[in-house]
Amino acid sequence: MPIRTVMKANEAAAWAAKLAKPKVIAAFPITPSTLVPEKISEFVANGELDAEFIKVESEHSAISACVGASAAGVRTFTATASQGLALMHEVLFIAAGMRLPIVIAVGNRSLSAPINIWNDWQDSISERDTGWLQFYAENNQEALDLILIAFKVAEDERVLLPAMVGFDAFILTHTVEPVEIPDQEVVDEFLGEYEPKHAYLDPARPITQGTLAFPAHYMEARYTVWEANENAKKVIDEAFTEFEKKFGRKYQKVEEYRTDDADIIFVTMGSLAGTVKEYVDHLREKGLKVGAAKLTVYRPFPTEEVRELAKKAKVLALLEKNVTFSVGGALFQDFSRALVNLDERPKIVDFILGLGGRDVTFKNLDEALAIAQKALNGEEFDEVNWVGLRKEIL
Amino acid sequence: MAESPFKADIERVQKEYSEKMTPGAVATIPGSSVINKTGSWRVFMPEFNRDKCTRCFLCYIYCPEPAIYLDEESYPVFDYDYCKGCGICANECPVDAIVMVREVK
Image (cartoon, rainbow over all chains, first blue to last red; front, top):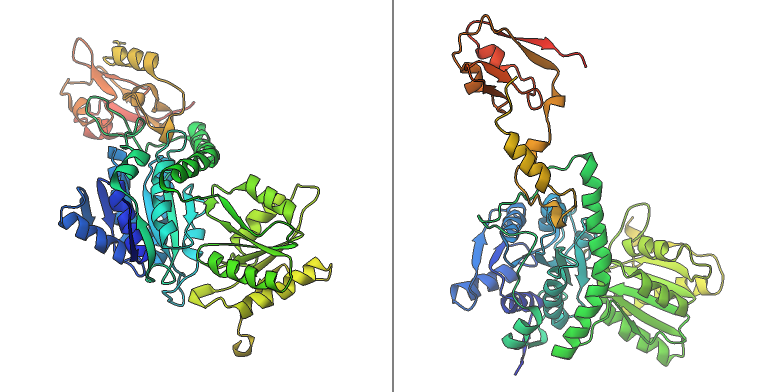
């Protein structure tokens, strides 16, 4: 029987790692994900998890150790956040290029400067071009489930890409919620053993990994990463279906909430989706035709699902905890790209909010709604809006 | 010129070497260094004077590639397919039997 208990998202991530039985975990503690390696080292020390826990001196070493371990042919896991993920940056490309299915739990936190330990998505969003798969959890249960799914998808032979699972700093990492810990046997059945065919060390089969590629081969090698990302779209759907069959919890790349007959659809990711669903209920009571959508999968970008979503709305209001300077949010760019060549497309309004852990309240969402309604009524509107900005101190 | 002692290796690798891209660009067959000729990197090439040579083997020992092998009479033979023109052989030769000259292609 699955155990129903209460825990923080950090613990849920550690439990997910324990259930997935990685052979190597290399991690460096960083707020707010410190508890993940702490808990895992406890599991290892207690003999509950048969794995090598490598204590490293930085995140750069953590991910490098993971690349080495994964290249040797074992399941590998690590956890990080913010500056730690930024420090891993150059190795993230290597992991994706070498097609090593490492999984990282990311406690989504803002980037410096100024130093701030609270939640936004700037850290993992900044790594969107590395080739890694990206999942975003709405609550602690999703943090656990998505890590299992991330392993499943990453290790699929059609994909073989590393994956990161983001869960919001403090809002999830340090908040206790009910979480169901699945049975080990069912997880074993779901994940199976990791048996790489492309990358493992064996003296009987000498290979070279991480080679130099001349201009004649580099482009093709990068294209295979592109192709794997495309393949992942289908594989993720399959994994979601199988997960639902085995564990009873349903996931979709783009989860819709009360979107039928909606004029305005709020689109967001992570824990903010919970707030937005509540807000949509509140507006529906007032008789406003609004809906919500949540991106569970951000990379590969669910273009098809986004196009389907776009058919249902007149205005897409994107709520983002990240910013690309002079452009807007990352979702704004991705949605614009996905819809630009369609004959009929909704207006897209971008909202940047909640940076550095600022609460996103109904009052903020009212502000966003007012601008989205302008767009709906054909009035002039700003494409990118900073919501809840304290203009009086500027 | 004597035959390259790597001839068999070269032929084996050329036969087995697949041009197909593997996941992660893994090189599955060792020995691609043998078929990927690196001599084109050269700017200076070693010019060998057989009359001056004392057959001390120093060039053969010091060649980092190794692009020098010995013929039946133990004279050095330069494999210009792999010689990168580093000049170490010329530097080590005690009797100046090797001089580096600019290669005109």
